[in-house]
Length: 361
Image 1: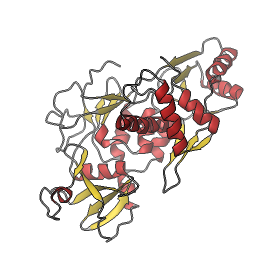
Image 2: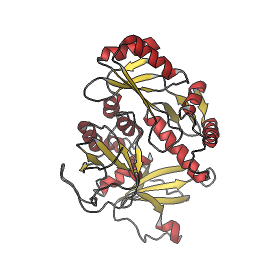
Image 3: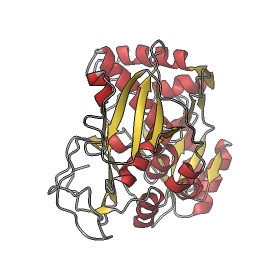
Image 4: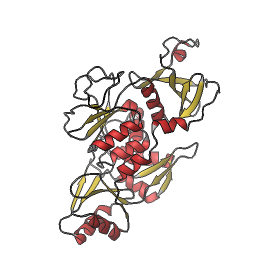
C-alpha cells in the first residue's frame, strides 16, 4: 500500500526536536506500514535508516547531533533554497513541512504570478521515507522573495550549494587542525581502510592475533575503525609514523586516498552528473553542496556504464582515465555545474575523472 513519503518529515516537524531513539522508533513504525519496503531484515533496515538520515541532512531538512552521548534530531526551519541553475530562477523547499505545506505553497504562488511553476516529484533514491522534491520556478527572483514572504519563511537568494562549498574546509585545512598524539592503539576490534577497494577490512593483526605486520599497507598513513566492545559504536583514528589523531570517517578516507594518489571522483561535463564511490562518501558540507545543486537525493548505482576507470595514477585534468577502479557502488549527483564539481574535487586534493555517464535518470 502506497503511503506519503513525507510522513517521517512530518513527524520530525511536529516534534521540532527529538531524541535519536524516538527518531528510530518513528522510522521503524512508518517503515513497517509501507508495504513496498524491500526487506524486513534488521541489518537492511539499519542501513536504510542511516542512508535516510544522510539524505535528510544533505537536503537541508534536518540536523543530526551525534556528539558524544548527546544524540538529538532537529527539524530545520522552512526555507526556499535557490538552485545554481541557469535560466529562470528556481528554488526548492527545505526544512519544516506539514501535510498542508504544499497546498499553502501552491496558493502563495498563484497569488504572486500567473507564470510560476511548481513541480512536486518523488525522489528516486530507493528509500521509502525520503521526502518529495518541491521545486518552484519563477520569471524573476523577486517572485521567489514574495512567495517566501507570504509564507513567512526565509528565502536564500545566494544558492546554498555555493555558500556551503566555500564555507567547507579543505582536506588540508582539516588535517592541519587535527591534534596528533603518541597514545597507544586501542585494543578494540579493528578494521583498516583499504584504499584499493575503498572498504574497511579486518586488519591483519585482528585476523592473525599475533601483532605481525603481514599484509600491511605500503602507505605511511593508515585509517583504522575501532568498535566499542559494549556500545557497538565506532570511532576512527588516522595513524602516521606511530602518531595518531581521531578523525571523522569521511575526511580520514580522503586523507588515505590522497596519500595513495588515487582519483575517485567522476564527472560528466556534458550532463552535469557527478559520481562518487559509496566507499568514499563526501564530507558532510560538500555532500550537501552537491545535493542542493538540484534538490534531488543522490541515486545509488551498482556499476557505472563505463570503460574501466583509472586509480593509482596522477590523472591530468580533462584526460580520460581507462585502467581499473576496483569498487562497486556509486552515488550519482545531478545538475552539478562544472565549477562546483572542480572546486569540490580541489577541496579534497582530487582531480576529476572526466567520463560520459550513459545513465537513464
